[in-house]
Image (cartoon, rainbow, N blue to C red; front, side, top):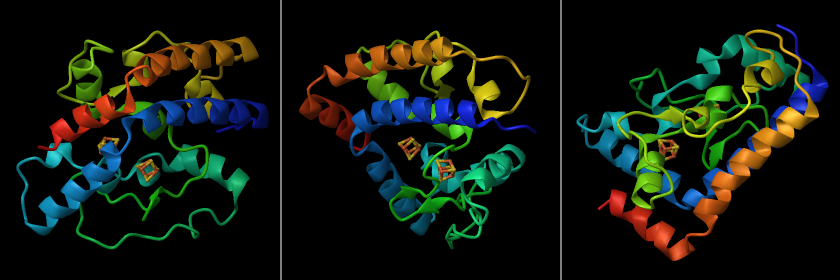
Length: 200
Ligand code: SF4
Ligand code: SF4
């Protein structure tokens, strides 16, 4: 697998744009993590498909080949620097070793799936706020929701090697920002109420 420093810089621009969109979901992930821990501690299994994605899955090992290649460029000791979480084995072989107390410990170039995934709860919030109309039974990638240039596998160095231009990156970011602006236009209190409604 070949990595390209210019492409990885572009990938990081895109992931930062997506993070600024995900931040508009306010305390959703904190609530989700709290609920997951409570249900695991109480031995409940019924809603495990709803549990915190970083606790149930192990994206570090699922994407080891590409992730290791990319992260070695940032820090040769990247894997050793992660604090392994202790806890019971979860449905998707989680918890992910990159999960720290305050979220993901990878400062950049996270796996593509983590970067683009909207979980069922995020999809429900977007539907409830009438930002999107889509199925909410399972998680989707952002390219399933809005039309985006198919450039992330090439930027990350996975899959086919396709030439990517700065214009493709700008077009990707502009599309995500259009969706972000629609969500940001909803007052914060209303967004928070909608999120709280999921956890009633
Ligand atoms: S992205 Fe979704 S599943 Fe993952 S922690 Fe946040 S709310 Fe939970
Ligand atoms: S790499 Fe980070 S974002 Fe992805 S599952 Fe692991 S902790 Fe979560």
